[in-house]
Length: 632
Image (cartoon, rainbow, N blue to C red; front, side, top):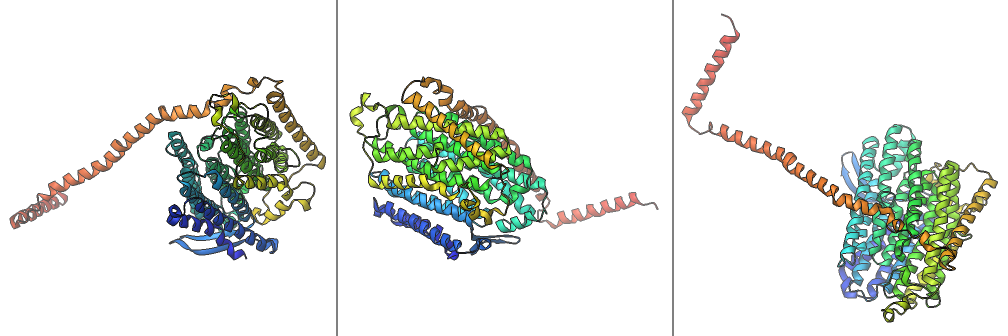
């Protein structure tokens, strides 16, 4: 059954190729159902391989399935092969599972769009690229999927490219990710130079034998982290992700929940044998960047007025938690939060899309209110997502976030405090979003164009995924409960892919209970302040909705000004230097050779007397040289 791993990416690839050929002919809704069926087939394949892996002993839960040689070039050998282990299979399960639900949701959401078939073509290609990224048995194949999701994100974010803002958002995502890709490539070059291979298992074997200097492994980790910062939207390369809201809402759910943004965290966890060999300050840097990003993004989400922008900055913040966990050596906790986040963040984005759909495209929270009775399924499931991301027990988000906070306390209490305060802000801004959307008096009825807005519940193709994701957001925490070793199912499952490199907690049971209680109290405070401010209106909301927070601390605008002003001028200067100095030197060398050759060519005229004269002059010259060098 493990040998069927190749089927997992083949289904979305076949869906993409089919839609490329006949997508326009099939049209709506057949194209959507075809793409959704392809993802469902991929999910079923993942389940089959999962069952097969469960039947194996723990030490046998790692296999490489090679399809063919890709690049045979001397010592540089790269194969198209899939590494099936608990880590890659866990990623496949929630990528294909949540991806199937998002595809199904999109059939209803994209109804009537003139480019309906093209949208699903991009979705299938995106899913195929993501599966190649997580299943690749070598760094180059992972990088191929890495670049694939980057290209597809550009196509999907700027899907409605007729709007200049959407086209700009797509280009911004593409260019920002190229900065991170530079780090990934440098790491690959350095690994091949020192190891002679890009195969994960071969790299890990050599790293484990301590044949590579710690300085080298540290530099490799830092370069890989730069790649992760770009793809997983950490400070300062998070800039592309909030603007990615320009794409259709299912794209936001697919990119921000279960796929692209988690690939950076996945990469760091995949190379955990390299991480543990690096200097401790490098992993400490990863933890601090994650914690800082989580707090920074949460503070911005507090004042956003676009329903999708709140969730976008929330995604950046939650990714910061995952990176914090990686920096603390809590790889299982990072995967745990990645899984639960896929459930509740996909639910929240799709719920937001349902609200936008029911409000005729309106995304401003200030024009919502009182939608709970008009959109009961959307409201009920969205509230479950709110409780899950806020960290209210026993919802899934509480268990994963609490485990990360415990590891943060064990590493540095300051990291724990930053994570705890971020949790309080998360509970506050999500409470604000829920109240402004579903509670209180309707505010859209006070507008002059109120007749154009008739709130209504979404069709079943959109509400069914919401119900499934809401259920998973409730029970998702059961895969990793902290009560005993036997309830930590995810930790035992992932052991073969962690190579016993994971950090173990050194905290007593009492300490863990106190930390969990403090986390619950912080969440309660955040929800209480949110209700007091936006429902009961006992606190002035202007205290929190500061212009500097609404404008993201002016960081994005400052970067834009620098890149559009001094940055643009610097790039122009570099272009001129390249054209006049670099190209000038190359062209000048060519011109010099050409002119010198023209002069020498004059002596090659084909006349015998000219050559005889040359021979005579040469002979006389040799005689003079000989007489000057000798004494007679």
